Image 1: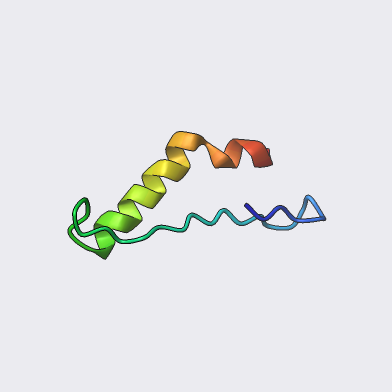
Image 2: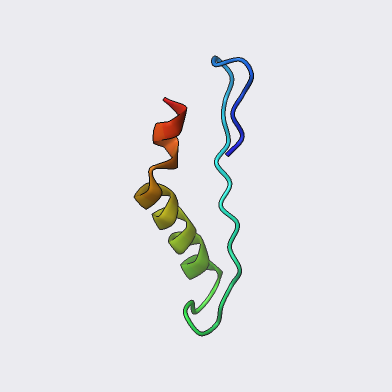
Length: 48
């Protein structure tokens, strides 16, 4: 998570994933898993 020095600027939440063919059938599944993890862990709550 990249927090801005100035609270009025945007912050960035980055979730790095490795595509695992055993669990995901393609890139879309990996992206969906990453978004799901961001929502589940509520990373954005740390920025409020």
